[in-house]
Image (cartoon, rainbow, N blue to C red; front, side, top):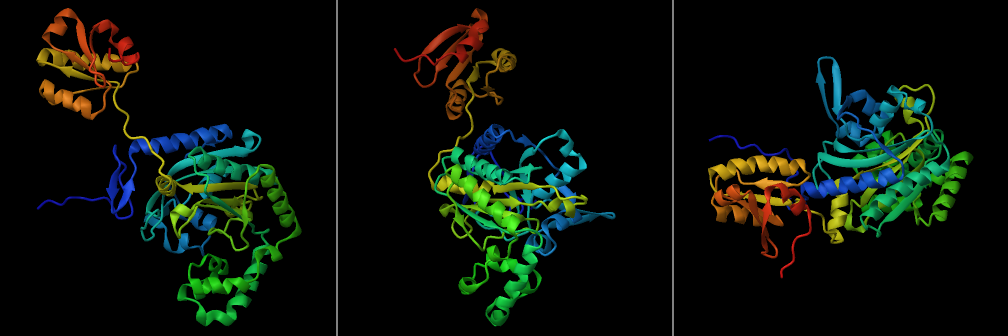
Length: 435
């Protein structure tokens, strides 16, 4: 018996039609195109320009950029070797964007760089609703500005994308992480606070307490979350400049009418963040409620080889999670676009002419389909109906002799004889109403 191959667990195919994969609806290719087009439209309004980086990156780039002690690097990377070179399938896009910024000296373009991306990422984690081994992200990176207005601009851009989809029931959580000297002091305070409770922590949390105590703030364990009630707060450890930056940012968000909730335990999962951290949540996503998140990462450039920090702030968002939120609020997404016309050929001579006619009509800007299986007229008409074509163009021996096609409006049943030379103009016009 021959092997029938299946897609790898944690991945999915995007097909012309929506389908069910293990209990989760995978939207059609048309729906993905709609989402991507909407994202691009909003990015253009903020004058963000697209950047595309390779899916393959050096392993060390991601390890240094994201952080050796993060779960992404320690457990979730798809890494491999080819000779002496170590590669990784990118688990996120911010570090690759900063790598490209430094490599290609984009600072020499002048001004602040507003960059955005859309594309796949990869993490070797347990698949679940909204979390896949290959998933898709969009995001924006604003590089070159220390001003708190840059932080507010990125947050406004992120919210504008979701508003373009009609998603208003979201919560913006906000915090500040301080400068490079703030977190070591805070980590020491966290370790001192949790030391008496070591026996109450899970094995994973005990390990994190020693290696990366800030990850304890992300715990989903109810008992551990209750312990956080008395934990020290990061805001008490940050430097005056970072506190001033944070207060300015909050004032700018107030000016824009952007509501936010201050969350002293929001730290994000990546090591390159400094100062601003934020997350956008939706109640429609369940326990894994984050739609998008981001923050400021001025020190990332130094981790990637720069002699000087490069001020930068950005966000990343999961497209699969966006689809879940859209489905929960009942948003209708587009399906496959129908052809403008379906050409029906009666006989071999007509089939040959229809083949040439289809190319001419397509060159005129029309979407055209026709039969390639030599089926009967009745079967071709059924196919035209299945494809939701507004018109069928019927051509047989009589039509070839007269050089006039019979054009039928499928919704109204109205039929008209149209000269071959006038077909493109006729099909571009309004569908004739029933008289």
